[in-house]
Length: 119
Image 1 (cartoon, rainbow, N blue to C red):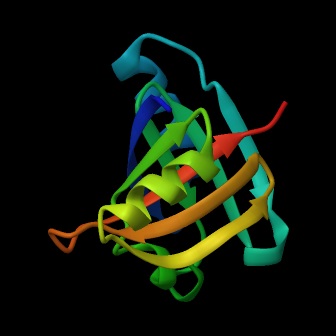
Image 2: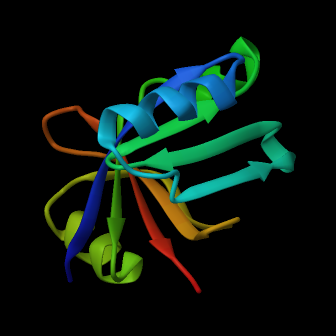
């Protein structure tokens, strides 16, 4: 059980390509992930430890309380561990374009996304 990457979420309504270019310059590296999530009408991109989520204000609203995403090696192991620790699973494990995710409220009240990429 290991956190592979911690990603801070940034929410934007437009100018995805400009935002990607800015963070590529800031990090000195290329965008490592870019895809559309048509079911939610969102576009996502990742540069360094930044996860950019682009969509209308209405479509972004359900996601804005979750500021950080943890990319993990085994989402099922984390689900078991977090449940044992008394955390609240707000959104059970589900299939997403990159693999699987779940949303969890930690005991301190902070909300995090856990995601396991599937190749």
